Image (cartoon, rainbow, N blue to C red):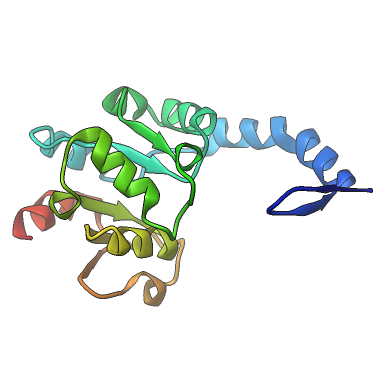
Length: 163
């Protein structure tokens, strides 16, 4: 039996399996997830700038992951999900939505990301793109026009000041 929607056809057994392993996934995240090294220092140095989170994840997932890492209070009221827009990344919709809600022109925004699709979305939105090479995506996929690639989050405040 298949569950059909506009976007997928997934065997019901796969859906049941996914639900069965969700508690294990949450337990693993709760035990292992930590903030990216240097991000707290970078955010502390950037308190004079408006910041937000614009993620492909659901609000529930972000509440959970940002809560575990202790970063949630830094972004409270400024957390945006792809569930709020018609097209997710690599379309620019989410970043444009976040900029609009923050009251900032897209060309005045900087996006810090670690995935090629998110960086494509940032560039498509007309925003400055900063690619964090945290070794989760091959660096060649992070590079692109007008994109600054860096591998130490503590460098972010200086990079933003230089642009």
